Image (cartoon, rainbow, N blue to C red):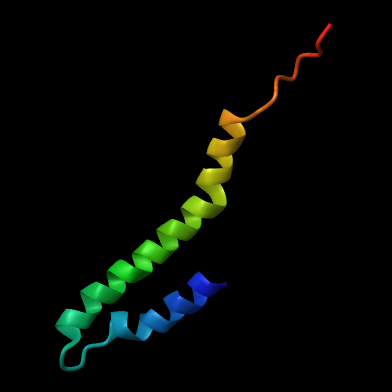
Length: 62
């Protein structure tokens, strides 16, 4: 939820065309991209890697 609010807060800066936007627009784009990619990695990739590395053997022990 925090990343979503931050991303929505940077959207006006990313689409602005006023004076000084040539500096603000790339910065906002990078911040939004970082928030989206970090959220995706945290919610999907990290649990998958953890499950692959630390899975228990399914075979019953004798």
